[in-house]
Image 1 (cartoon, rainbow, N blue to C red):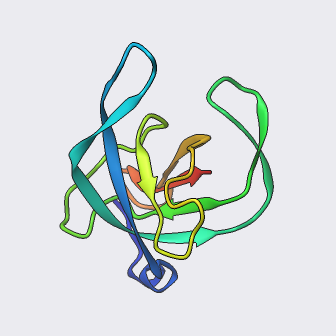
Image 2 (image 1 turned 90 degrees about the horizontal axis):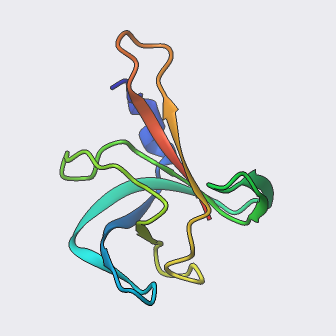
Length: 119
């Protein structure tokens, strides 16, 4: 994993990631009590993006996540998860449009450089 220490300065926010634990027959999600606290950069830009089904939708916010949590644990964000943004962001837990894995093409071995969560 090739994380640049200089990028730490750009990760000025902290978000909480929860994975989906289960879903009821009516479609209500339940999330795991085990969460990940992650350094992140939050950008509020209007972008036309594609969702999981290939449809074009508007993303109002993009969150760039470090590939490991603040405790050093790795995690795998998916669109079925839940992201909790810092206070002052409305809504605090917005719906996730898509999650993009951005690989490290420069360093040997590659791997995940960061994640982009489109909200």
